[in-house]
Length: 102
Image 1 (cartoon, rainbow, N blue to C red):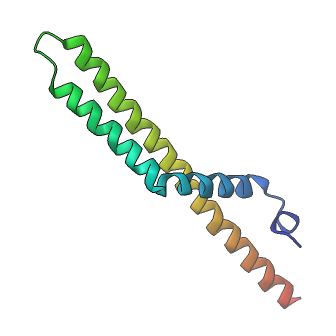
Image 2: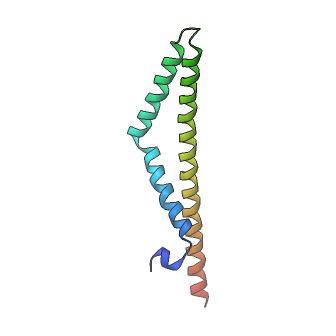
Image 3: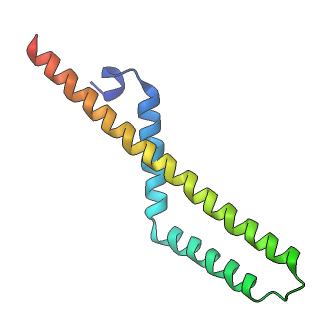
């Protein structure tokens, strides 16, 4: 039997799958390098602005905040997936224990 037939809580399975996918993306070296390159580029542009270029600095600041927000949200999805995986494992263990005790 597959996990989904044993435990009809598809949200756990969906969250686990999403989390594993996102974790893989976040751990990918090319993705890490791309994010780091964006952070460096935004910072370089920000520090090279002239004192009167307030709007440019504000825009770059918003870009940096947005990048951080995306990373934070992806991290939440990855952590939720790990929690779902542990929940599924706990449910499976309980089901095996109950099956052996009857």
